Length: 462
Image (cartoon, rainbow, N blue to C red; front, top):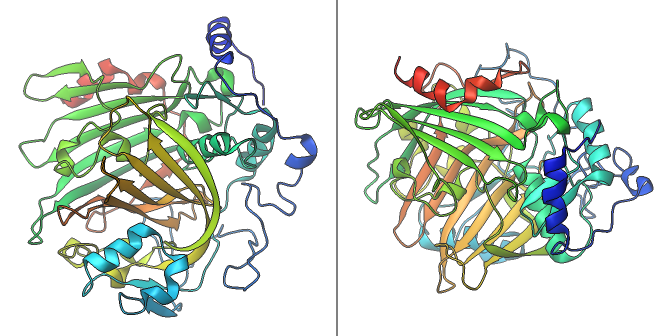
């Protein structure tokens, strides 16, 4: 893997050096631990001392019998696993040290309906060999640009499998691992999102989504990125009032050079316009204002409005290996409860997570005054996120339900869920069990012109 830098990039990076903290690079001998006592993505291979978290033995890399390929709804590889115990408001104090404040709040807010079914822990995350190799190289080369605004010296793998430096630097690194985590090369999916009202009513907003993870382009390298992590297209197909609209995003790797580029297509005006506000706490109309732009994918976008602190690791119960809730043909009405997802369709396990806290900087604006991230140590997915209002009160609890997509292989969320504790409403992103297919992954590299504003208009008016 080569790290050729163009003159413009080098000059702009130089401007940020004065304000950037000094980095203590990971040594080659430290990086050599990857694949030895550490997994290829940086977590300890060993389980915990109590034996309740198992050792990592390679993850899940082969599909179960009957699986025919990408796009088919996944077959549960653990059909015989049973609930070990269920956490309810009645016994939550017994398990309090393993619960986040957000999960405790959900138990307290919905005491008769919300519960946490706990299964045996299975460390299923895995990555292809070439991603593991790139991760080893990134470990000694990757650096944060400025005050968390960008990334340099990394490509095709987790940039910081071994966190290092002070607590602020570790926090940036952990979040950048989430932002650049392995999710395949290209993916398409038709799915729906819903905002569930207090009486349980909801209306589907259905769209076709396409993404090319340029950072994982198997035919490229860092010098070919053109400062873009991924390209994303979404075409709204229903309801009629929103149908025909589209969004195009170029997510940038170094936001000092160029912040996120976004465009929207308005079907009524038949025009493509730049969308400069598609970031931070801009509300998402399809989510009935229950999700902000940077809530998408649990968290995305710039880090610059917050002060960041790494709080270490914890063992907590998190959603994991959620195959049942993604089974083909499962009616949405069975998934969606009045106040939250049907808990009997969810699976929780004990895992180690990185805990990161972000506090809004003085003088900056965002609807969330504080955010606390719980990032899976294996996959680097943020699986739980507690979000506080400006008064310091817990406001929204975000939850990602992951599983291993064994055709990649790798762990990514099935559904993303956003609970508003104050409004007693919630929003769900990624429903596709009533669709003929789920996510379709491919290693084919599209022409980048496919993700241009001109292409957006041509495709939208068909």
